[in-house]
Image (tube, rainbow, N blue to C red; front, side, top):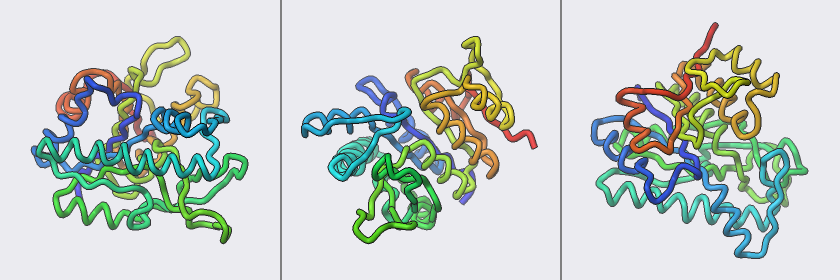
Length: 262
């Protein structure tokens, strides 16, 4: 498989006026090979609230006990995944919804038990994606993944994983041509708030160390670094603009490009 484009859609960029679904259908009809990873943390929080389950965050990451894991799995791999997949298919695209569990796509371990059932990516097995792409389908991936590494017998086989590193590791495993993050910010900014159009791996790492890149941008940038080192062009762009994805493929303007300076 060549020229694969991996796209991470943040839940905050999907709304009633969003054009991402139209864009991925149009790009697929042009013959582009697309892989989409989606989030949906706000929806998970809302459904937890409906179920009377308290939500607790540590450094911006959701603590996920068993009840929260059940809701996250239902919302991310069920409701959101199928809504996106259906929206693409009814517009004439060819999409197949799945999660990191299917085909043992994303294998994980738990590094911080205090966070509950929150995994980190240990291994990506891209065979199922390659089969779908070869058959003409666009995989739509929920970040619920397989708890397969060092799992206690009594633990569930599922874990919740941040979709940002999932996207980066999938891009690296597929040796993707591009990795694109559709976010709710214009790009990566410097200490003065100016968006940086280009950023080397070493510069990005320095900005993380200095605290300029912080919060939810850290896992995105680290994921971009992994993908770039595997040969991809990584971009962080404002997904709130109309047809941001289509324009990014055809004529990229704005955003931040990460590149390998070695």
